[in-house]
Amino acid sequence: MENLEEIKAALAGLSTIDKLKFLAKQYAGRIIFSTSFGWEDQVITHLIFANNIPIKVFTLETGRLFPETYYVWNRTLEIYNKPIHAYYPQNELLQDMVNVKGPNSFYESVENRKECCYIRKIEPLKRALKGNEIWITGIRADQSANREDMHDVEWDEGNQLVKFHPIFDWTLEDVKTFIKENNIVYNTLHDKGFPSIGCAPCTRAVQPGEDFRAGRWWWEDQSKKECGLHATT
Image (cartoon, rainbow, N blue to C red; front, side):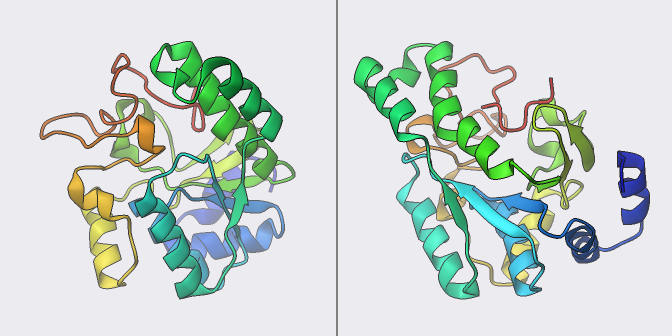
């Protein structure tokens, strides 16, 4: 399979599980799923692990995650007894940044925040994706305005691979219902007003009526607040 249209055609009409199984077979050893242990990612992790689908699962260990996130990570390992590969920031890059600018430089400017995101997330992501042709993510269409122009299968120019979002068309209620019906462990911060959970210093609870991602980098302009992992421009 060489292009998006062929992949889309092959996946048409299949269930979510069968789509994952099909891609795992077609791209054996070249398909990978990234989890940050949020609601959506726990659904996909369950689909992969519970059905023994041969897709490598990895996470970005930024060093600034919530204790609740580490708990979900550990419980997921215990429940499924499957590996979750951790990718860490490069020591020298991180040390140089902190030595010069301190541990919380991301509050001082957008440029500093983007530098921190690059060191802790973007660069490790590129190492994780290297050599793969399919990147599975937990993106849903209604998570932010910038993601409404995305599709469930798309080409990632920056990383030179195909991205597949298996629950792209699911609503948040669909996700929560699936988690409840399958007794899937999830991050309890979701019950405390955190729809999107990232690094602890950069995430707060969302107030009623606020945008889905208002709790991420809340001190910045509200438009186009992405860390760069799923940039569409």
